[in-house]
Length: 346
Image (cartoon, one colour):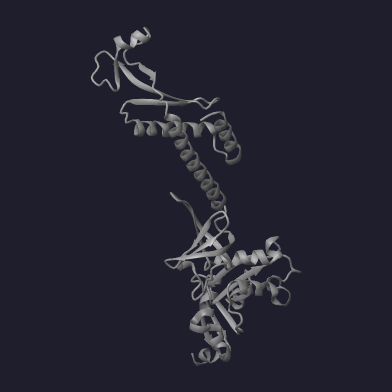
């Protein structure tokens, strides 16, 4: 190693943010192992790299003792004082033992250490970037499939879409561009592991934030999201500005905004309803598209009793109870739906 090597470390420090001194200390530690491995030495050694010239020196280290028991790691006080009379028992006696052929081994070892540290630094940068994006949306390209997991290329790294986070019956094609929601970022020995989801309600929320400028600038707020991925979702929106129609803003001109989101979610139906602090109005809106005759609420049990026209009962309940279930999730109220004739009979 030489001056050029030291200059290269200086450049690395600027570009990758890896401290030169930390790198040199790591290389010195690696060179001790390399020396012992290649020269079959069981003695204690210290490796020193000159911070200016890059020259390497290996020093044998022995404890100075009154009586020598192991000559590989100990030297007598009498012998040590022949070199320097000020030595005392308990001091360390060093002599240079740098082998002539050590330069090639040192260069190879240093290269391995530097490459490893660069890899670690890059992984750390990627982790720091994505840990701050938990709960955010990312766009990537479907790269490969392993054990039902879908691996998505994000550019600098890849994300994992596990089966539990995949939309039921959704097919993924290699090379396809998809959006997903970052659920968790983990630190592993192989680098950062980014877990994403296509079923998380947060994905729907983030898609609306991307498509609807009024949500992005705070004019319209998303108050609640209920989702059964791949089938149907409900989203409750609100605006404190009286002249702004929050539902209309989310639907967009000719339904273009919501249609873009529906396309991204491969045809998932989305009901956009107006949030209200009045639970009666809110429950009524949440059951959209069904029409409601009346709503009675029990605030202590948070139960809402809803009456709908006979011909609207199946629509209000929905296929396999989906509409009522989503409305309950959206509002946080337990909803009991009856038709007018059922109420009349009672």
